[in-house]
Image (tube, rainbow, N blue to C red; front, side, top):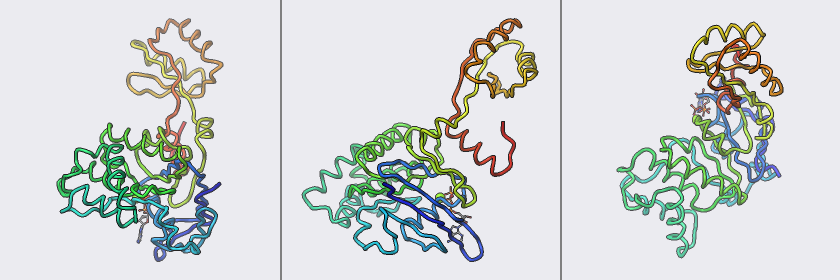
Length: 309
Ligand SMILES: Nc1ncnc2c1ncn2[C@@H]1O[C@H](COP(=O)(O)OP(=O)(O)OP(=O)(O)O)[C@@H](O)[C@H]1O
Ligand SMILES: [Mg+2]
């Protein structure tokens, strides 16, 4: 089932077109990575989905229902964090979370247990009695997430929730989100940390200049990503580059390694043979898969007419 679906979603601010004819399809239990450069329109789209702003045209369906007709209490099942989270600076983390839990009508008996579970998951336990104003950027961000998750929403919209998180916290947040999705929560998330996105998303949407350039699931991404061959050679790098280029292959250098594109997996052995026959002695010869970041840049590059191999 599609939990979030948009049809022809468009938004103009005055004469400026910010979102143009976007058709999103977010599956239930999916972690949908919403990718795009600064200013692409990600936050604006999320605001539209949350009914914080009204579309110029187009329709948004949540769980199959036009958002315009959803009753107010429907939004109790939704959690969101759009850019920088807000919390009361002079109160402690625990006091803030208690306030949010009460606002979300969580029964009194369950509040402390919920806070302790979330703090454990998000590595916030040592900071429960610190005031918000004394927290670091990353811990503030995690409090924002805890606030978003406190009522166990079925649908989550997270706009750059991983801003400023350290590597340990990134893993903690990733595991928390994956567990939620495994239990049926649908997560729509934007982030510029594409390595992190690659670790958790099941669907990918790429927004460029307010248009949805691509929408694909992770299997499709796996099929479409291009693999390159990494060849490391200590001497004669230039000669090897020329040799490979003469064979019609596209070669780039990372300094240490040569990256060769356009070789089918079936041809690896014969290529290695040809290289060794020419007395080149590579120390590494291995395929590397295009990662989400390179895939994203390639898609964006195509639309911006930047040449790409
Ligand atoms: N209220 C507004 N009035 C006018 N223009 C706006 C308004 N809100 C957003 N915009 C414009 O819409 C465009 C998209 O902005 P948006 O914040 O959605 O981008 P984004 O993809 O979230 O970027 P980032 O990665 O930097 O967060 C920008 O050009 C922005 O200036
Ligand atoms: Mg944004």
